[in-house]
Image 1 (spheres, rainbow, N blue to C red):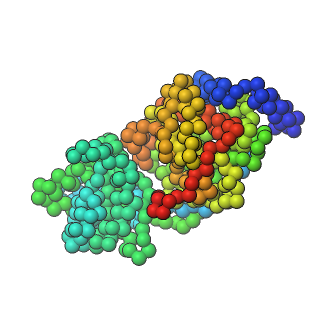
Image 2 (cartoon, rainbow, N blue to C red; image 1 turned 120 degrees about the vertical axis):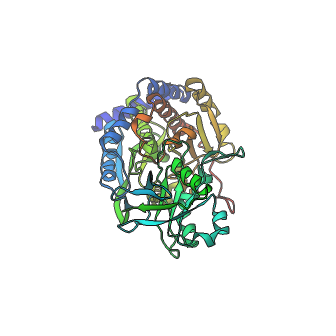
Image 3 (cartoon, rainbow, N blue to C red; image 1 turned 30 degrees about the horizontal axis):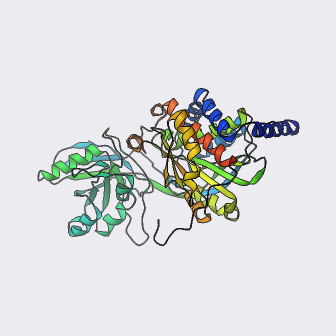
Length: 466
């Protein structure tokens, strides 16, 4: 953009701000976003053009370059790449999982991110099924030399309870540690998801330095059920698991940071973002291509409508949310001295199904101050449900600076059908759903940038608060 064009844009933006209320502009953004959306085209360009984007991979590097280029293309004033180091874990050759006895069945599974490999021939052992870490500890004597299968499902339970992601995911993140402590030689989990499509769900797992590392993988829920039925019928189930995954250390990567400079308070910053990386088995469309597309669409909307906000809008395409959070941590560390000037941070990382509002973490009166915007979103796109408690993994490290945080609220049951699976592909994303999310993100971004009084700061965490 030439100096003259930039000056003219600023003058027009100032005139627009003087002549149009914040509420009217928010409505105009929603109208533009829902009738002339480019978000799905942006998503398709990312997912079909690049594909999966596991941290440290060639595709992740391509995604960083793509992110910087498209942010410039849609109208950002400035785009930079914040250099970071990310873990590079490689899945290797296709995994093999099978029941060898009492009968033969091929199992559908995926190594979990960060797992070590088995031997080249694979690991063969009898299976022990447990439903919790407590049960494993109570039966620890039986676990030695076995493969432990953690069989705990998301969703409705026989006793009427409903287990969510947070209830079940520890079997994935900590399962190998607990199984190894009991003397197991390998561990499996029932995939962490809400549907029975015989889809395995991958995801990050952890080891502890003073605990033996054992191979750790997820199998489809139907296969976990099969093993459970065979054992319940009195059979000894023998399984072979073969994985070729490996840790290749740390690799260079980057967060992509794009800005539209504020016209009056450029040193005050509103951050919106999603994560550019994904797991390596699908396209990362829902997790988190839609978040990336929606945030880039906000830049386009502001630019195409000639809107220059009072505060600076900063879009961050975070790298390495899935298996390390290096991008979110690096951003907070690099901006530690200016977090007091970060007036809000918004994250979209829960898909695009069934969007109905935002979760809000702010100081006293913060949620109530957003009531006029909630009313606008309710009237225009039926998404006015603003509730207490919101944020996201990548913006979470900014909490230490008191930055108010907001997260989009979506239909998690549908999202977790495809989460971390080969089925996380563009065809699952409904264009109208993504346009609705983009519209809300744009209206909220404008509101946060324009409001005379920023949201109240988040108080320090109380002792014991996560």
